[in-house]
Length: 468
Image (cartoon, rainbow, N blue to C red; front, side):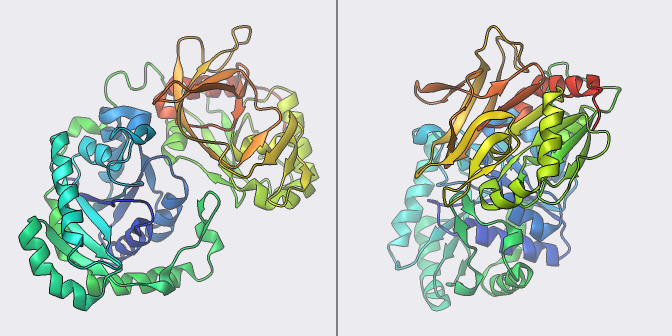
């Protein structure tokens, strides 16, 4: 059996302080030498960057829409088995799932799939006794799904005096254990922008902020009780360290190791770590480069991975790196396989607008302009299928891959080789440019939802013999 101590921090709503609290708790656990691993529920990229900065190891995303319960358990277990304790950060409200009308893919769904006890983080600002029926409502509501997973509560934005006064009554009336409080910490706030939080590298003095936050939490949270809760989580079977039957669908590692150049810098930083690990497991050699700073692609590149991020904030610098843009355009023109998502897709355009609406020349591989809109162009989970019957695609007829969209930009050339369908409701639309060796569009793809897609990309890269 595998003993994997763990807990999840969830909340009634977004904006309850989950990320700040998660980072402070991770810092304290790391300071204790407990080797924490961290996970983010759902498709968010930025929160895991903060986790990673705290613990010094890559944080992972876990998402039951992308991978279903069994594969999600495996992806959790193989990382958690290398750690001393695991902390999951929930998303939105604890029961908020697909389409806003289902618990599926919610924080609660992930906790249920992974048998993880939940600590509910309640923003109690401006409340006293009224926090009791709020907590009780969540405790009661979870029972309709057959699992009692909320095992503890942390009260955020509450003074120590109020907490000590209310704690006996809250515990007596609700039966749930209070694990501490968090006072207002105005000097530990993490800024945000149009796609969520700013990235860790943009915050001056982040290390000092995290250490200050951890010091405050050591005074107000019951860490021994949290460790006790984590240690009581159900054990896993040793077999769950292996992917469940059929998860890889016959996708075997390549004997030849194609070299894939991964764009990674301040402009391109949105990657699912399990996507990259799957590529490595299938035989890829990943090497990073910076479209902002490097003048050439890595030597021997056979394929390109252009992830999302914030290229609109660095449009001028990207435009001024004419040498790399020309090399990317030349490689794509010669048929080098590539995957480009959201920001990476925008980089391949003829032009891309910045946040002020100024257009800058980009690589020119996509004949159009990426432009800013005043609202989310598209948002949420999608399932993709190939729709261009006359073209050979990385995704053949009858297969799908799952992903997510979240962007304030759009394109005059969005592509029409794939069809995106919402998992709740009937909405669908054509999107993405695709060939048998490439896929480019706004969707962020999760490769574990169809490993054959990733394998076909690597096979095409292994066959590529162009020069870089």
